[in-house]
Length: 395
Ligand code: HEM
Image (cartoon, rainbow, N blue to C red; front, side, top):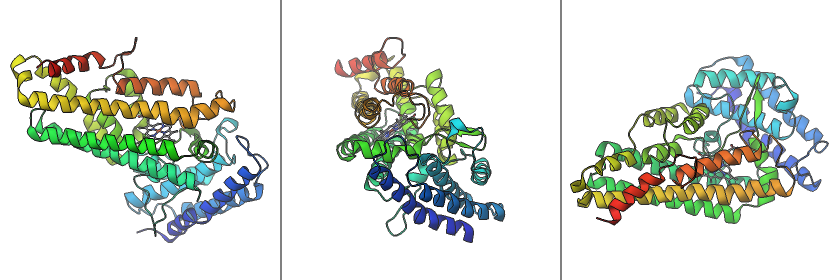
């Protein structure tokens, strides 16, 4: 059961907090603010800070009330919303601090995060897959349509990836020659096609400047206690990596990819962490199909031709989602406005904190792995997929 204080805080996050952020965004817009918001809406910023701190102080004073995982995780999300909004409105700024000035919020977030086994800040699950709506209203920073559009499309995309990952997971116990594995591969294809359609719709409808200047800033890195934590991104769920690993496009023993997994584990809910951990030790479908190539008889079998073809189509679609994310979404909504407004060198432009060119290089590598591109100096599955394709084409 939730405590009274926890309920009141949730009510504040869903109402007054949203209203205050919305007022501030509209004030920034009216004042023509872009990247700098100093001196605008100072009274409103102070109200947000004071009201949030009052709620948090009451919760901290109440102590550990053991409300169960779901309520604890939800409360962590609410504290995280507050801390991220303080960062957005420049009430905190990690490079000018050695520890977060939000001492009570940090203490509560760290207590919750450490006891739940997750990072002590809001994660994308709080905004997307585990964001409960009351009377049709889910939690968000503002009431503005751009933020809602972004969150709803992200949530749809994440669930479509999760469904594709579940289809692939179900194929593991069946094996690559099972007739029903074919159905599962077709299901994964349909889900990835939905990701592609969803990304396209987001690309066509989201306003570049409203996203860049009024949504993205809530995802900046900030301190909790002493340490700085990167912001959440739509990739903070296991499904996307489950697809990478089970298809075999990315490998858990690749130093670049395993670093990425290590860095993201605590941004996922513990149930999600378990799924990913389990996947890291499985043989990929690509490796299983490649093993079948050792037996020329098997490759001529109807099951091989049918299932290998369906598998190759899943890989192609997964690659397409990655290219689309990189070349459409990131290019249009981050790279171009940052470049246009001379902000490329800023360190807090992205959720993860590094300079834009550094982040883009990392994401390009991931995109090349997922699309099995033929790139010098990067070990992708290009040649392996080519071998498999030949076995299918020349049967
Ligand atoms: C990560 C931008 C929408 C899935 C990222 C990152 C950026 C970004 C910049 C890297 C985070 C960082 O290091 O700062 C965008 C933009 C979007 C968008 C501008 C639209 C306006 C989506 C959607 C999905 C998605 C709809 C689908 C679920 C991912 C994934 C990652 C990620 C999976 C983690 C990296 C990876 O594994 O690929 N995104 N994104 N994004 N985003 Fe998006």
